[in-house]
Image (cartoon, rainbow, N blue to C red; front, side):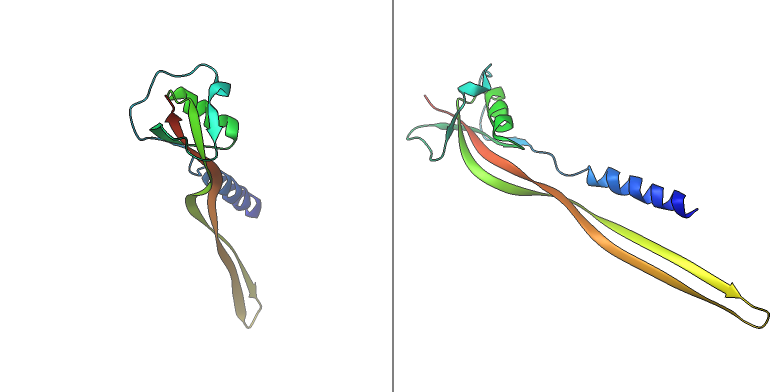
Length: 132
């Protein structure tokens, strides 16, 4: 019985931990025709003089940011940095009960431990732009 409960708890924890918030694309303006080669998306540390914002993109790598920027028609990307995407908090509890019976008495005790596990991930974020 303990093995089964432990296995079920582990499966539930794994399933919920995988439910972290995924990187997103948030449109700020109309999309343009997509760019086929993400390598054509120039990464800017500082904004250029003239540009049009298309979307805020998030990803786990700079390559993923460039791919997402290219998909919405951006030819530039202003790197914003790393942001924390919060996921659900998972509560985990473990408990045991022991009972002892003798001819003249009975006694028992319970032990229980609970703790919360925050989930989430750090992702890269940038602004997909079009530079004329």
